Length: 499
Image (tube, rainbow, N blue to C red; front, side, top):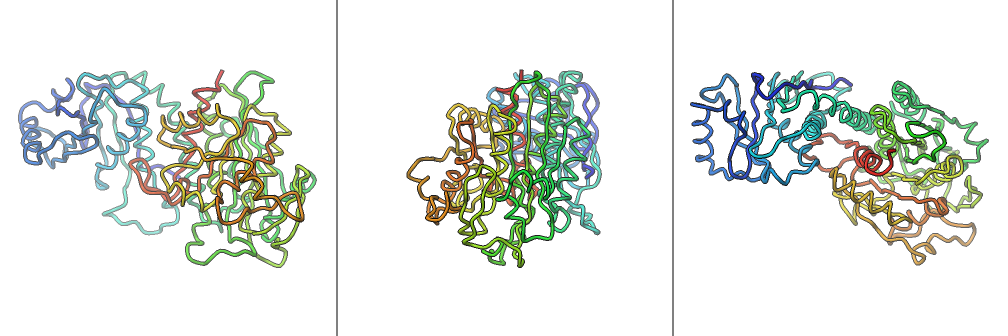
């Protein structure tokens, strides 16, 4: 989809255009260049506005002046960043989102002056501001035939005035790659299921990622049957749409070095199968492929920024439907690992998709670690709401690195327990295991199930049911599909796994 915003960069001394956005701090001071812009009548107007509003400079609070005296700008917006010396990368991302949110939909031009008193905003921070603007202004309107002039934005050009124009443009190249990955993931999650079925998802992944040098392999039903992925195929057997597994390889590290591996659940629509879901809210199940969307967006981002790492992404794509061929409660299936599974509830389908793909990734690629992402359980929403993703892992080091990346990006994770007491809840009387452990500790028993398919490979499972779709609006996301996880995992790779 085309984006509603075009970004450009210029020196701090350049003349601003359109809506003017400037920064202050908790002391209500301005940077040197901003002081030059606001001299005379404009400075007096800002001072009067501060006094009238009893403005204290609290972080992310704003003052908005229409047709300010002494300026050609139709609107002047002042944003406070609070304690300027304590800003972190995620704060600059938020700043971009806040700034974009203050530009009215009628505006066609805007200028953001990245100038603070006593604190230089360098290229990396400026790139985060630009990314925040892109993420905030994203909207999914592909299927709207009529636009509301008063609420829906037209084309917008935003200029960022920066201290290091050349350095910022270089930093933005990498940030744009990540942004492209996030927005691609959002597009996938937002698509309706009658458009984005497993074959179409696979086609889009192949088309989009091959353009940046990712090697793609797509396994269809016949190939999956030959490989022995019977649990994955069992989920999709009630649909007229064939299942797919897409394998994406980016070789940016040393030849022969084991890759890092990312696995995504991609149920393009989940009715629950024979254990059918209630009708209310079932339309949201078009987003049950949020894990696969994240992995696809991540692999695009790594390749587009030419990450110095070998990475492999695998997504299992199925549609869970209840026709006469559908899997039944009580069925027993044999997984790719050879372990047998009793189906208790056909709506516990995501773990059946993941278990085969996890085993395949472990056996075929011998990765340094595996991280799977899945909109897996409603129970994680009960436990954590939409603020954190649930993290389950067999490796303390990997967990700590994920938690650190979460704090850096704002895509936060919270580690949940695993243990033998929970594991025995998925034992079956008739097979090696069953696909649910009962009502209690539902997210944990789902993770215990998955752990049976990773052996000793360092592994983390992220339950993103509360964060990937229908998550609360934020300063950097007004979309139903958030693209959650792309920035988190890109940061993890960047911090710890690139040569």
